[in-house]
Length: 155
Image (cartoon, rainbow, N blue to C red; front, side):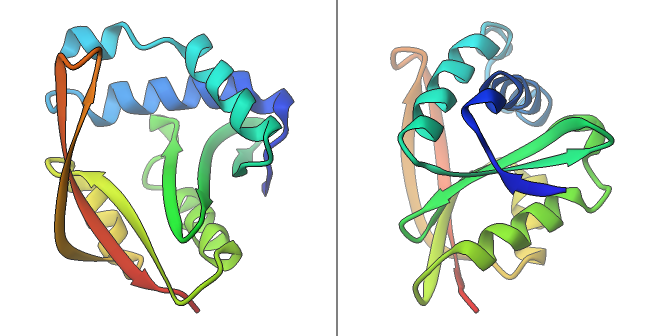
């Protein structure tokens, strides 16, 4: 089931966010940084986003909040699933609902340049690497994240 997130979902979203980062970015981002990620800190951030009217959808399966996506202003900001739900079609279903909810002619997203699994997923969903890159930092500048921009037309 895909539905709009509520503030009551923030703790579960924080847990999904951290666990998915720790699994997806293992070997791509320093392990000490991944180990220090805080589900409660992420939950507080998502509580603010949702409370402020941010567009966040959650995916539930068998009563478990298994994933979430955040989007708006022609951009997909985040799409994460618990690792045990990868490869089961839930991410595609969540993605499709996000795309249905987007407005405008096209949308963008940024993906970690070394995250081949995510890039392959987005290509299968019709996104195209448009050649743009950016560098973000985390952990007070100690972690550098090279990102690649993908773009797609909206229905």
